[in-house]
Image (cartoon, rainbow, N blue to C red; front, side):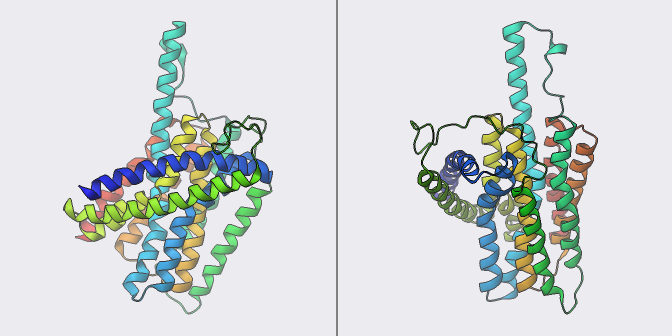
Amino acid sequence: MIHFLLLIVCAVAIYLSCEWFVNAVEWLGKRLNVGKMAVGTILAAFGTALPESVVTLVAVTTGGTEEAKNIGVGAAMGGPLALATVAYGVTGAMLLLKRRKEKAHVLETTGMPESRAGGEGEALGDEKDMRRLAKDQKWFLPIFIVKVALGLVAFAFKPTLGLLFFAAYAVYFWREIRGGGDDGDEEDEELEPLKLQPKVASPATWAVVLQTLVTLVVIFFASQLFVKQLDAIGPMLGLSAAVTALLLSPVATELPEIMNAIIWVRQGKTKLALANISGAMMIQATVPSGLGLLFTTWKFDGALLWAGLITMAAIVYLLLTMRAHRLTPARLTVAAGFYVVFAIGLVPILG
C-alpha cells in the first residue's frame, strides 16, 4: 500500500508542479523574447526532457557493467516511443473530450442543430498549422531512422557519430529560437498572472526564474520516485523486471510532458501542447542517443528494435495525416494504439 500511495502522491505532485512550470515557462519565453511556439518546442521541452537525459547520462557514464549501461540505451529508446504514442494519444483524447464538452454547451445554450454544432471532426488547425506540426516530425523521423540503424551495426568510429546527434539538435535549437516556422498569431495573447506573484501584472524576472527552477526540481525528483514505485509495483502485479522497464517506465519518465499537454489543452493552447511533445521528441532523439553512442556499444536486441519500429510507424502515421491536413483529435488519439501494439509484440520477444 505504501508504494501505491507514493505513486498517487507523486502523480499529483508532478501535475501540480507542471501547472506552475507551464505558467512560469510562458513568462520566461516572453522575457527571453522567443517565439510562442519555441516556448513549447525548446523551453518547456528542454525542462521536461532534462530528467530523462540526466538519467541516461548517469547510466552510461557511471554504470559498472554493460547491463547497467544498457539501462541508458533503453531510456533513449523508450522516451521517443512513449511520446510518439501515449503522449500524442492522451493529448488527442483530451482534445476530443474538450470539444465534446464545448459542443454540448453550444447545443444547450443556442439550441443549434447537432449537425451544425461542429467540433469533434474538425482538423487541428488550417493548412499552415498542419505544415508547422509536420515540420518537427520531418526533423525527427530521419534522425530516428539513423539512430535505430546504428543499433544494428558495429564499426570502429561508431562512437564518434554521437557528436553528430548533438550537432543535429544544435541546428534544430537555433532554428526554433530564431523563430523559423513560428506563425506568430498568438504573440499578443495575454498570459495568466505568475503564480508566485498573482497580483502583479508584470512579474519580476527573478520570480519567473525561481518558479521555473523550483518546479523543475520538484518534477525531477517526483518523476524519479514515481519510476521507483513502478519498479516495485511491477513484480507485485506479476510483471517481470524487463516488462516493467520497457513498458511502464518509459511512460512514467515522460509523465511531465503528458501533464504539460493536458494542462495546455485545458487552457485552450493546443499548439503549445503539441509543440511541447514534438520538441521533447527531438531532444530524446538526439541528446540521449549521442550519450549512448559515445559511452556504450549501442547494440540493439529484439525488444529495442521493436520499440524503434513502432515509434517510426507511429510517426509515419502522424506525418501522413498531417500532410493530408486531416489530423483530428480522434485521429491523434489513435496514436496511443501503437503503444498497445508494442505491448502485444513485446510478449513473444521477451518470452
